[in-house]
Image (cartoon, rainbow, N blue to C red; front, side, top):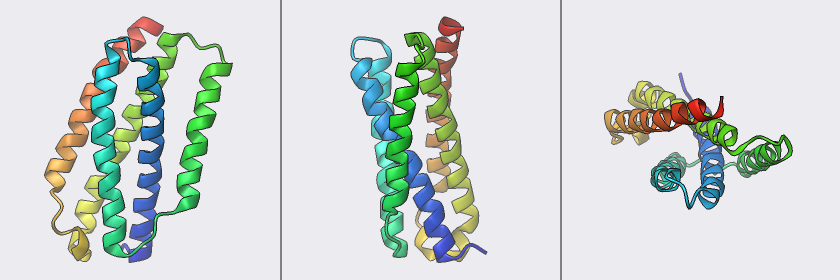
Length: 158
């Protein structure tokens, strides 16, 4: 049975992932302003910010503070990823592929989050009003749209 503490830890883990995704997307948008990918990334950023805000709301609702340590770790992970791309000499196409792959993986994790919370909801009244079907559909749509761009980047990079 998921306790409030376990639920808070789980939500904080996913919040850290969304913080990382927002950081990565903001950086990617700056470097993609003149490409066809830029508008797509901007739209995706808005959706991920909405999900991040929902996670923050859920943490408040269950009375668990955001973990500054996990958020700092997410920030650091984004910076390390940025250095890796810069220092490895990856061409732009490979960098796009790796960015989109990371986003696809994170969105798949978000889908798992919504499925897990749906299973836990009967024991957590704070989750009762969530539209799990809608949240899962949105995550699937996000994943599918990222996957289209990821496969195009793979064709270009590899």
